[in-house]
Image (cartoon, rainbow, N blue to C red; front, side):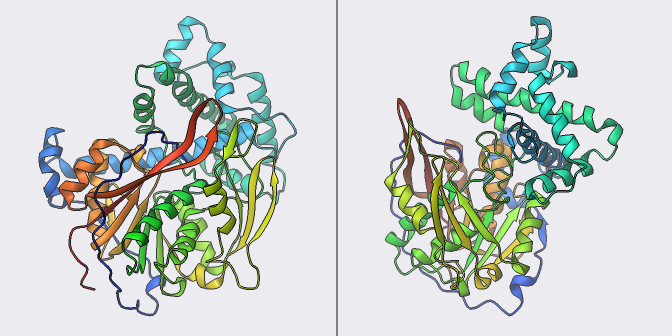
Length: 476
């Protein structure tokens, strides 16, 4: 979860708009949704802004196609980002010491002379022999583990990814070294170069708009959504939500730092949203449809398995208590109740003793909850789910990956999928987003700032949640 440290002042209250759509027809959850490509006419409220960026009706189709091609590359890069972070940190395939990715990046760049450093930071070009010895040893151990049978779900996942991406064993090692160099360039730019700029936050944001599309997610993101839903129910006690779209639910594979391998890879947000809605009186699980739409087909495949085999979630906080970090009482309270609304009645959620400061909790998902979840492949920038309208759309930690042009298209698609009176919930602080959503007819109406943990001698780990409501009243 990317921390935001600016306090946000709440603006005008959400207008009351309760609605209760009719029950879904039998089998509706089992049908795959068709997607519809965005067209120039769909973006009519934003034409002046798009034209200011050099886009015209004639150029729009080719622009969208270029975005689709770029996003396909960024999906690949995002998958391989996680692979590199896994190779550096995992204890599942080797006893060699874990390596913090930022330290590995610094070791690499420090080994380059002045003639080598500038080309590397500009384009990622570097002699493969410059890969630090410790990282090279871990990569060799990982490659050896690929040939051994394993029950470790993360290792199996990355085994399949490597074999699909680098099918030729003869060139596989060289390919993996190239990916290591690419990823280390980004990490070094983010952690060392951007931090020395006049506006570090803006420099980091610029990096994210061209990096790989990460599947990264964490339990903490559900806390933010729960706070937003709490605001909604306090303002509109009679509101009921039946259809929810989660854009970019992600999959917890291997974050950039602090890899925790207590459980298998999980996609937390669909379950956290499904759990929070009943707890705030906004929905019943048996009358709810949640569509988790991700650009990465691997994430979609993972979520689709849940309908046949409801998972047992191992929930572990990414942030941990330590001498310098203290989890807030509010976040602890949220985590202590997480999963009660979706758990199998015969297996209530089980809290476990903290492990190295990380809070832990196990939840066996009920069959009813699993049946409420659908998963679809969707590029929110270029496409929308055709013919489907939602009472709530959630998009946290994905909008920073889009430049302003992509953001306009993504928000156009969000607007097209909201019912009148429907709510959009996100945590993007970019000022341009609020101008865009106002033009599209779903302006921001509430925001809150949530502190997850305090940090000694530094700003708190925190984030902001924004709620927008589409103009109009639902007639469903």
